[in-house]
Length: 524
Image (cartoon, rainbow, N blue to C red):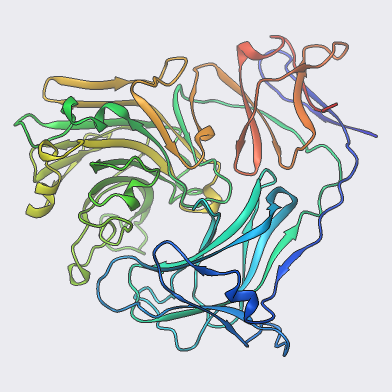
């Protein structure tokens, strides 16, 4: 059986696309896999604390369906206190005797309930509940707000590999007391949409800036970090830090293609500066001493300075955030109230547009300045202790510089921003001035540190077409030709962006200047 789709694309010349595809035999979905916790052995024989935490792990007779012959898993953080201890968490894990093939399932669902004797945190919830792979990467997470049974669903990509076990994590930086969480009906939901038909293709003309594209491409990862690190900044002997000279130190970066301010507010670009960084993907969490320059579209309260009035507007906002002596956490980074501990937020600036050149200048250890593309600026004053911590001249490895993006919402997965220039200068000394127009990322200068490295790549000036299709696409390859009477030729490799594949094409990569045809061809 063959199915054909015809898509007429208006573009340069007579470019169009005919999208024929041949269906594969339909796949039989696997049976659902449930974990219902029928007795204490179903908990104690398989689940245990991990990551250096010590929650109580037990079986409860309370069942989501009120069954008398079943119950639920109960984990309790009986060591949470109201003291400002930073991030606190309880983490448990289990392994599977036989791996579960994630791509054969659409989601993992679990019923969750917070017990009545649990204490809400300062934000009015009971912690951030995450389900993770055994390597620590997350399927997703939610704030627990209800004390009734609630279904939590974690979507799975059609390309998800073997799942060898699970980690359950629940944590907060403002717990006020103990918290207990019940789990029941942990279910791997089978993928029942495998009809054997080829996915529908979409072809569109695009305009893209030349530069380094930073894409939030990891499926289901709302808090993924997609970073690129400037390697020389991680070597103390290169002197890429401030504190040892009277010359000002300036980091400049130029954004283009930043996501729409209304549809994707909350999407984040950032510059991370970390003292003696550990080389992680999430230095803003892992490392103890960090400066985070955060770029987001956010609500500007208008000339009257009062949010929620008619003169509010969505504008580009850059915040100076920092933390000291706090590894494996970020409570200080976002703290604004000194009554709750050391404040990490030290200032912000608004501008009309995110696209353009922004700079952060350190005049000395205690005085910095953020300058917007329109020339406006704001002064930042670091507290005495913080300024001394960021004295790179007395560090071991220097101050690592990373630039990246973070979606902060599943709705922002697949969005990107393009970095068209990055420079670091100390007085008259220029350490880097990269406009990302080379054919490849320079491995002597840059290293990708990202949840999904395929989402970070250079985009040429003549990028002009985007071919995309949803997953799953098992058994198919993209093909193209310049004439309907020709045989199909393989198209360039596609990237997975979120839960879809995406093929970006230069004009020179089309099979003909006059016309091009694209399709998905079954693999023999």
